[in-house]
Image (cartoon, rainbow over all chains, first blue to last red; front, side, top):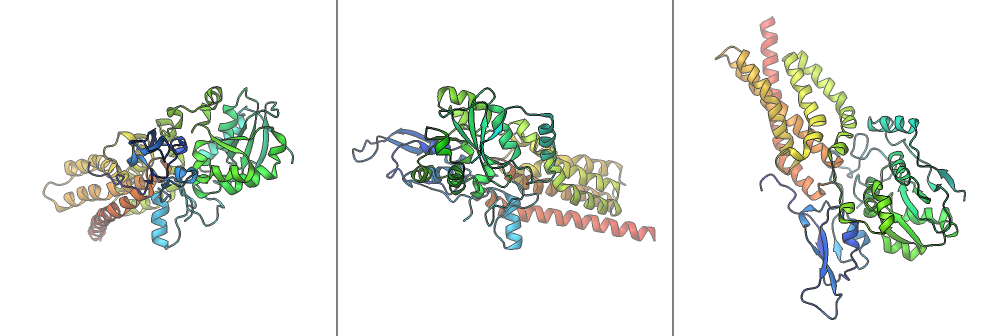
Length: 118
Length: 325
């Protein structure tokens, strides 16, 4: 489909490390993950394993990466907020939100608007 | 440490504050004191819910807990809602651990379970919280409204885990969008009025209202995935009546008729598109990777159209002034 800038994102899943606990599926607000049986079965790995059922829906919030107990997920989480990004590009500063930004002004310090600070 | 008391009643004064918050009045100052609150008559086995110290977050939680005895642990997120604060890291691992210790929670309840809002997960490393405090984290549903059902079964259904952005959730964002862009819109409308004339000023106001009012309301119905192209299409649609009016009422064959027609077609859509792109941060879908791609793809188009539209306006204004002299 044309006019879709959201087909690619930075989400990566490493099934070899996954223990199938299902935490990623619990925290994901866009049902990106499903938990199923490992195919082919591997006696040295967990029976259950996460897979990316809908990678395109990922908004890079970072919840899965933060809560994965075995570091099997990597994503460059950050602000999906054009206002903060344009401002950062114009001023050369970090992506922060201020007045009129997507989540209001705060005293969060040197952190970005809707994503963890880098 | 003292346990504060709260109830599930949303008072008239609460509602007035909610209304003011929606209009962006004193943004960032609608804070609840962080700490531990008792709702109803909780005992040592009662559940513990964690939330942000933003008035709307706290009120949504306590309203949802009507008839439920429990504790609410309010983190200091500087008056920012759960999801945005989680993104900033203020609704986060360190603040949660600090607050568990400062309130002496381990001495208040006999169990070791905390129920966090699912949207707090981007800021919290659950395994680390457990390691350092002994408390296990359970992520509850996205919406506080689903808590009673969640507490009954102890499980969030897939529907409760999904973020949705229904009409009402989009509508409530309109006032803050309007207020945010009111000043530049009024200044530009005055410039347009003094320049090409009152119709140009009206066109500008239409384009701004398109981006701040119509766009949030129509978001899922506008074609294409990209916010910029959704906004461009909406802007073109809004500029068409102006363009047709120019063609119908202008002198046929006069270059000024075509210049003013083009002015509306070129200047209005980029205004709406820019506001649409700005709205990305208020919606729960776009990724940073995608938004960055949108900025690189469409900002040149938006800027180019706006520049050409402004050029038409300048030329028409210059001719108008020359004719007056």
